[in-house]
Length: 505
Ligand code: SF4
Image (tube, rainbow, N blue to C red; front, side, top):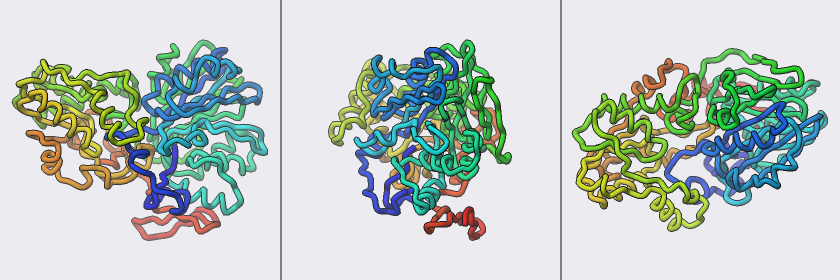
């Protein structure tokens, strides 16, 4: 994923020399964005086409760029482009991607138009041959590692943290590609699900804390690796298992080999994958996303009941939570908004005025459902609150008598450093306002968020397996601000002990 260019951001690769990104480029919609999905196919004659289909299913994880690298016998062929998977890959673009193996990537980017250099999989030549790599997640020490590498003379071609991994692989003295990659991954800290190749084997890796999901599937004599099971389904692959936190899988001519080279550390799966990021028809972290979301709605109904006529969702990701709320409360669920699936993504439009128009045409209210009703409106999150405000205004204009806003996740009060685009807490309404202030801003009759206990309960897993940092400020790794590099030494400052650790001298 890309590193933040904001001058105030500790992740900045440019030491504050780059231009701050405008809101129009960074956060055009009032929603959170996952910043990547990965898919790869090994040993199938239609590898590139199947990877394309897998990326299609993972489109929700990144809409601004897509790429596929096919490979066989050490030869890599790549096509990458800016836009949706369907924009980037027409039939004539897929045909040259020959070989029985392929890796692919979709990404959500933040850098306006000049994004091609950041579209993955990144492909490079180095002393050991060629390699390609795609990454979902974010590394918290990438900025410091990059400055260290640059001080050693390394030249970077992109502004992604992913490229740091390539450089670490390239300077490794190990012989095998997988050993070089393992060595590189031992130097990075943060979230990663990786898919990589040296042209001969396909390597999939998940970070030891298991922030992001990654699955292994089986298809005929071949294998499929993907961020979510919805990608395995679309290509007709059998689900084998989730790739374990800290596991490296290597698919080669001799089958699939698993490595566990890292020290065991506490799990920190991203709980927000359940709330919003993953597709509801996927299974991640051992659970059905749809079922977790329904339980979120049920739990919300238990702690935040209200006398009302109907339950409505802000579609689409809030639909299961609204159904859960309706089941638990005994209130009827109704479709008060019809989503226009054919409208372009709002951020494509450059002007604020046009983007607002995009929001309006995306969700069309159904007057017959809304007029005269006391409505429980379920949403999965409130980011800036601007879209929610437009939605509630629309409902009142359509004749809603009361609106009781219920949020299936706790209030988002902190930035994510692990792959979701909430770097700047000043943009988060709940970081700077009380619930009552937010209620007044939205202009609704009542507003209640899920609490953390209700969120964790819905996952049917222990709380200490999850990262909850955006809700509770308990970051499971040092944040990027803890890392620095003075040109030849990467330092990590442990803020809990005020102690400096030297990771390289
Ligand atoms: S901070 Fe929030 S969004 Fe980021 S990994 Fe943790 S739970 Fe997920």
